[in-house]
Image (cartoon, rainbow, N blue to C red; front, side):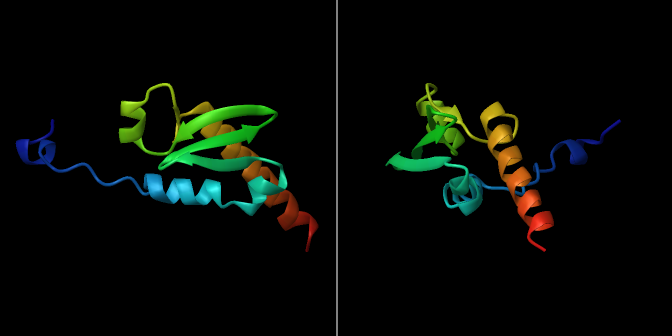
Length: 99
């Protein structure tokens, strides 16, 4: 059983911030090489063109709370997982075939 002190400990910060995820995806040359494009439409809001579909997304939970029609790109979101998987596959292919 947890003690009162353990229960009151602050939750550790996530290792990835919305800013770092945003920067990783929106500047990825690996994703760009697969014609996955990110265009900023408003501060902290992006349009993604992926598999001939447009998605309006944010990487920021507070923006998503204000505009729930957006997709929140973060761990657990299927689009996030798909984009990350695509980037990893391309990276792995290039790493193993360009030696």
